[in-house]
Image (cartoon, rainbow, N blue to C red; front, side):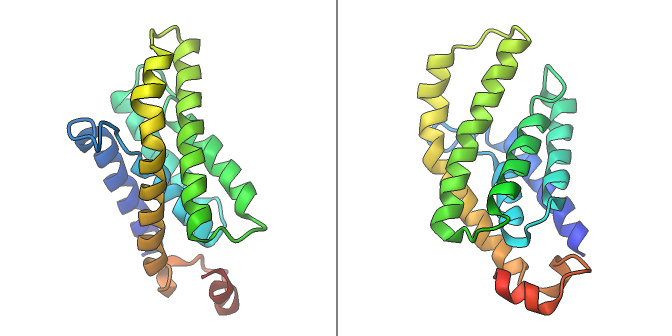
Length: 174
């Protein structure tokens, strides 16, 4: 059941990130649910499994929507591994989760702009930051916080935990 939830989160976040939000942005910004779900699951279980599943969402987006392979997948992998290393010895809490979500949004955009520069794709960096990156920072924090609250409810069920986790470990993480 755990992997079915991962697959469902992957599909829903990819559909919303690529099909819904480009047509109906929130305050002119296209939120990244893949990033929000990935961060919230990494914070809750402190494993890299959600990173790999939601990077598969990036892989789907690369295949169908990207001009260059890795445009979506690479930022998810980098941010996921960095978040995992950051959270391993800490408790994030709600404000920390939102703050890391906002920082991850900024890092994702920087990696995306660097990727565009490397493949020689014309992009207006200043316009991108003023129209998408800066207004998207609070929206990314809110999306990460909402995803964290939703996943926190799911992680109270035993089916969401890896098989090797003991009940004592689960109680200390939530």
